[in-house]
Amino acid sequence: MYESANKGTADYHFHQQTREGLLRAAELDPANARYLTAAGIVEQREGGGSTGWLSRAQAASPSDESIARELGLAHELAGNTSEAERHLLAAAALSRKHDPAWALANFYFRAGRTEDFWKWARETLVMAPIEPSLVFDLCWQVSPDGPDIARRVLPERRTVRLAFAQYLVSRKDPAGAAEVVRPVAMQIATHPAEEQRAAVLTDHLAVAYQTEAAYLLWKSLRNPAYERFGGFQWHGQYARQAGTALRVELDGGQAESAILLRKLIPVRSGQLLTLRWTAEMNLRSPAGPLRQSGVRWRLTRWSPKQEPLAESELIPATGSNGGQLTAVSAFDGGVAAVLEYQRLRGNMRAEGEVVIRSPVFEAGP
Image (cartoon, rainbow, N blue to C red; front, side, top):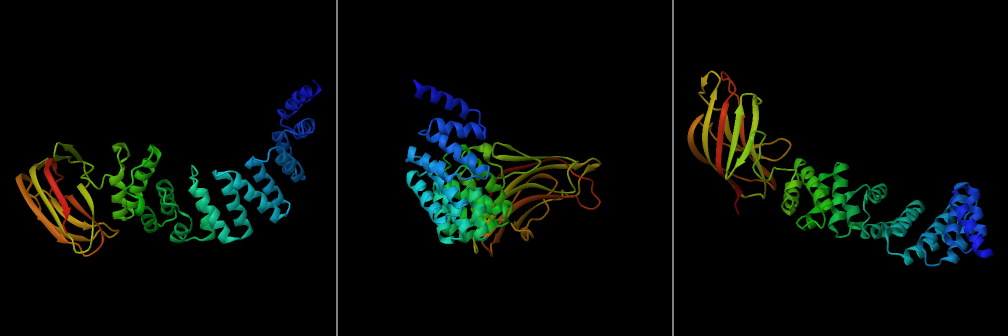
């Protein structure tokens, strides 16, 4: 009866969540590891000694990794690094979860023990934390080198590699991100959050001209809602799909120079690039017929300078016609096929419709 009353009183004091209440709860129920751990943590927070309380908590619950971990951190704070390491390693032996591995990675980082840090940073990532960017931040402080970090700590888990690739993009290293993601790019996402991250990364890599890696990621997407980057299929601000045709509608309010359609493909040096199209043109100006449409096809290198590789003649403003444009790639990377509009001097802006039927843009052997 007396013991039961003590436990009830201890529980009351514990739930006050004050320093005095937590210490009193641990005194009244000295076999309760939860109360003893709380007493140790509050004493540490107040600048007192916590290892005694936490040692008693560990004796009461020797299989609890969180207590071993707290005891290790308390010893580190007290300057007992060998005891700290011993208890942190014991915590990691008790549990294969993320927290004890992460505690060891931080401990070895603070101690300047680089090789041990790399080992436990990798273990942390193997256990797939929900958001591994904190691990990447610590790794970056040790070695601000994406390929070096990837070699040392990245597991072959697609979720972690996507996260690190996204991290490298934020560090202005899209080329490093492309290398990290390439080995797992074509694997199918295991859950929607992973697919969404792949879609965002596709966008980032494509606009950073990492075409091959972006294309591989884009092909792995299964949910059209996540296909943020439309560049690997025909798209354009003024275009809409109509069966196998693409309809471009101009109302005269478009920019003087505008991209009507574009498609990007990855290429290898020496490949033959071929663009074939059939067009039905019905363009005019508000003042009457157009002498020239201002519309032509271009093949351009997908790079910051957008170097032209080939271009067609201006397509007549009205009527049906077709054509073919070819070029040979002298580089590895990406090439865009672009249908452009440019208002010509002396002409008003065009109005009307351009219909492109079953366009084909491909890279040969």
